[in-house]
Length: 394
Image (cartoon, rainbow, N blue to C red):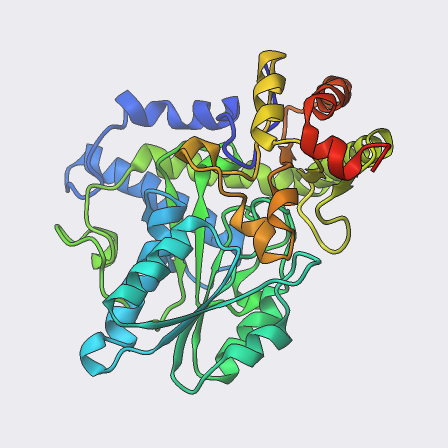
């Protein structure tokens, strides 16, 4: 298999696995126990916390709360903070998020709306970015929390989070960003950006699944979402995943060490895909092709064919890619991300997301392109819709 879906998940780097191995069976203690085995686990956990805090520019290690991943971090950022700063018993308040957030944000926002909070989605522009002026237009005196993702998972666009956070703060609102797709891939410093909260996930950066983190700026009022034994300084109960934290920290360390060179390499591969595919196939375009983007995501719109059909035929040839349509959920609805930037529904069905990573080679990319072109030509030849709207006789 040629794996080209790194934005979905990444394989665990062997160096990360090597760092984790001792904590599966040798240093397996509970980090909350007072005897030596427990103390050893605690020291490993806190060393991982300090490493991650340094990696994101946090002022202190205590601002890192370990979670099970990006979705839990997103949910916690919303529910735990709103319970303190804007409880429904005191009238609740207004919440803003972008229309192309990950479901970890959009679905908790939908749930909060049903509880009685007022919510607004701000749409990104056709260039794939959320602009501060558009955020400013939806802010209200009672806006309590704003959440805009740093890098979009389908487009790769990197928002100007610093300007967006300044806009939120000028109205007295807190600012959260889902940084799952940007951590380790582009510059991310929580103090420079001015965010109050940020969500992360280890499995997007060659770390283990089931491990993530929430940056929680000191002073932000917070009511723990998960109650229990009071671990994580009473912010997230449950026995800590020490081996996961060690893996997360090592994965981030490696990404930061290799980031500049790796992102330049991936950007070149991305541009190569976008150029060759759009030049080889008419009525095909890059979904976005300008502005600040993470290197490894190449989003394509291929008119007249279904993304699922391309995906399955590519899979038969050994290429793993993603499509914007939610086929895995049993729905044929096109990507909400593409709709949010103004792509027409019938065009959005023909989306492909090719995402590359540490182990992707030039041969992988060229092989994918060589496989894709005849697949598209064959599907278009069989498509009455394509022949009607894009055929030579149309």
